[in-house]
Image 1 (tube, rainbow, N blue to C red):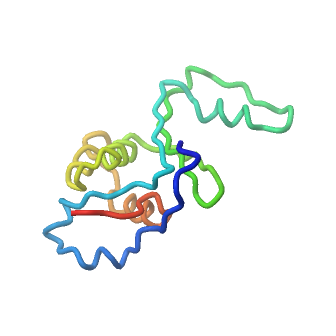
Image 2 (image 1 turned 120 degrees about the vertical axis):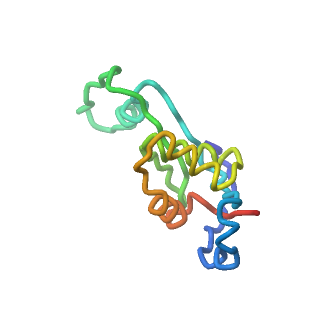
Length: 135
């Protein structure tokens, strides 16, 4: 994560009203500058959470528990770690490479065919993960 990343205003959903539906697939969304995607074959979120605990009740970590795909992002002054499904990770990863919305959706559905893309996009706008777009 870029600790010194600039604070930026969230995406105004009303700005999408100026885009014709025929152009939606060509949109290139911009991800918050503090956001980083982390993929590991280990449960890195559980390891991180165990290491930031202030009590002595640290859970045992099973390194064979499976892979983690995470979004690490600073919102306001708080660093948040969010678990992502395979499709969500593919969607954000494609967007971080400045691929079009059409390409990003195709990548996401290839990893998770039942992913609710509309819900994901609404959440990313609502939570300021997506901060802008270009055509």
